[in-house]
Amino acid sequence: MTPQERAAKIRAATLAAVEHRNHLVREAEAEVLEVYKQAAEAIVQHIEAAGDGDGRLSLSNLQAVLTAVHTQIKEMASKRDTLLFDRIAQAAQLGTSPFKPHINSDAVFAVNHSAVAFVRGFTAADGLQLSDRLWRMNRGAVENLSDHIQHAVIHGESGFEAMMRSMGKGEGVPHDVAQAYNAAKTGAIGRSVRELMTGAPDPRNGKGVVYQAQRVFNTEIMRAHGEAYMSSAFDTDGVAGVKFNLSPNHPKKDICDTHASADLYNLGAGVYPNRESCPWPAHPNTFSYVTAVFDFEIEPAS
Image (cartoon, rainbow, N blue to C red; front, side, top):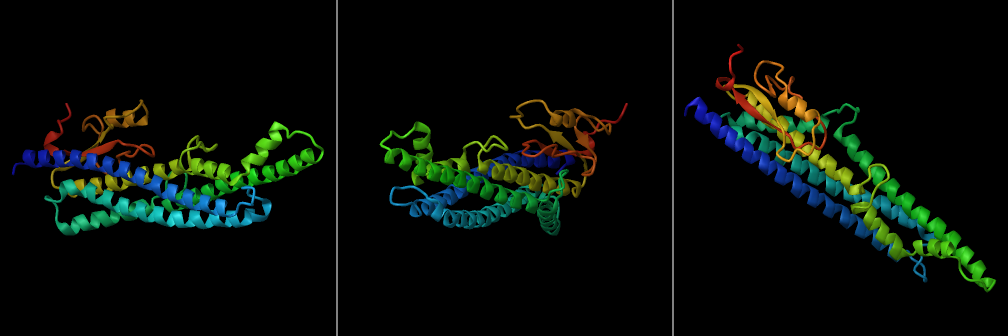
C-alpha cells in the first residue's frame, strides 16, 4: 500500500468516525433526556402522594417532598454519570478507529485509556474539572426544583389562609388569592417540575435543567474523540500535523473560523504540527473536528 493509498483510507475512515461521533452525541442527548424525565416522574409521584385531601401540597408535607427531590436527583445523577462515562469510552474508541490497521493494538489500548483519563481529569479555563461540573449540575437541579416547590407551597399556604378568611366573611375569593392557592395543587406543581427538568427555561441559562447535562455530554464526548484521534494520528508514520475542520453545520462565524483558516506554521490553512499547538476544541459543545495531514500533502514553503 502506498502512502497515498493509506492516507486515503485513513481520511475516509476519519470522516466515517466523525459521522458516528455525531450520531453518538445525538443518541446521548436523547438518553440523558430520558434519564431526567424518569427522575421528574419519580419526584412528581412523591408530590402527588404528599398532597392533602384537597389536592394541595401543604407546608406540613413540604420537607418530605424536598427530601425526595434530593434522593431522586442523586439517583438520577448516578445513572447519568454511568451513561456519560460509557459514552466517553465509546467516543475514544471511535477516535482511534481510523488508525487501528496502522498502529499496534497495545498503542490503541493505551491511547483509548489515556484519552478517557484526560477527559476525566481535564481542567478547563474556568478551573473546573468534569467532576466539578457534574456536582454543580446536581446542586443546580436540586436548588431549582426545591426553590420552585417551596415558593409554590408557601404562596399556596398564604392563598389558602386568605381564601378561608374571604369565605368566612362571605366575600368572593380574589383572583390572585385563587391563583396562589391553585399553584400549590399537586397537579400544578407536578407539571412545572416536569417542565423545569426537561425543557422549561432556567433563569440562569434560558433553557431547561437537562440542557446543562446535554451540553456536558456533547462537550466531553467530542473531547474524548478528538484527543484519541490526535494521539493516534501522531503515533502514525507519515503524519505531519492535524487540520482543524469546521462542522458542515457550523452555524455562525466564531473563533473556530479563525483556527480553521490560520496558517501559523507554513503547513497550510488550519494545519497544526502537534497536539500542543492545535487549538481544538475552540469552545464547549463544538462539532468541529480534526483530520490527519500527511507529510507528502505539505507543500514546501516558497
